[in-house]
Each structure stands twice: as structure tokens, then as C-alpha cells.
Length: 168
Image 1 (tube, rainbow, N blue to C red):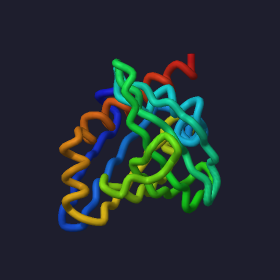
Image 2: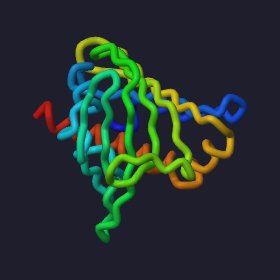
Image 3: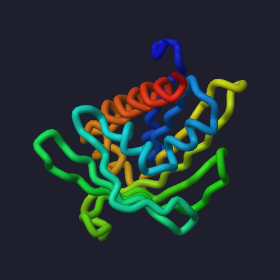
Image 4: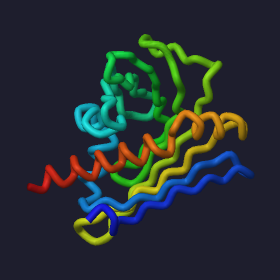
């Protein structure tokens, strides 16, 4: 089933953007919840064998998500997403950055602006469109060198599994 789902990953170096379009075989309410509730995000966000671990999450305009990507040896890489705009079940934007465990942003590492939209496709499918904008081309390239495409793709496959398990 996964192979038949829409997955577009486009790098636009002229505009410092990554655009991802991904379909999920689940209603928009389930997909929205998986992107906006810490207990669900922790189940799919990190590529295996890594795990996401939320420290705090306040999903509202002006709120943020502080989480760690935890590796198989227990190493932690912290990040935060600061929510800027939210239209429930339709879209949200956030500024994403690497940080320490207290949420202090590390300006030496590249951050990005995320814009996510959720489009129902009938009653049982959803397309999520993600536009990630970087300040500099070098920031985009750094993200790609860190394995963003492979890791994010694996995370989205984890989300497929989570959504499928909710329908059983």
C-alpha cells in the first residue's frame, strides 16, 4: 500500500526550499492529530532506530514543541519548533531550530521555517504539503547532508504504520 501513496520530495535551491507532498491513507483528523499531539509525534517523528522524546509541547500560536531525537546509544539531539500560525485541521507554520535541552537555540546550526497544509482526499485519505524554507542555500545543503531526506522519509513511513494501527 505504501508504494501507491503520493510522495514528492523536491529541492528548490534557487529559493532555498524543500517541498514535500505526502499522501496518507487516513482521515485528515487522524493525520492532523499525529502532527500536533506530542504522544503521537513521539511514535513516528524519528527515523528508526532513533526515537523522538517530547520534553514540552504547547500547540498554539506562540507556543512551541521542545523534543530530542534519541539515538540507539542514548545520545540526544535537541530541537524546538515555535508555532507561528495555526488553522485547525488545515495548516500550521513553525520556525524550527536546533537547541539544547532547555530550548536555548543554537545559532551555529541551520534553522528553517515550516509551512504544513492538510488537504482531505475524500473521507479516508489526506495529503500533507510541507514547504521548508531556509535563510541560506548553505543551510538547506547542510540539512540534506545531515540525511534529512532519508530520515524524514523514514519518519513519514513510521506515520503510515501509526495511522494504519489506529484503523485496526
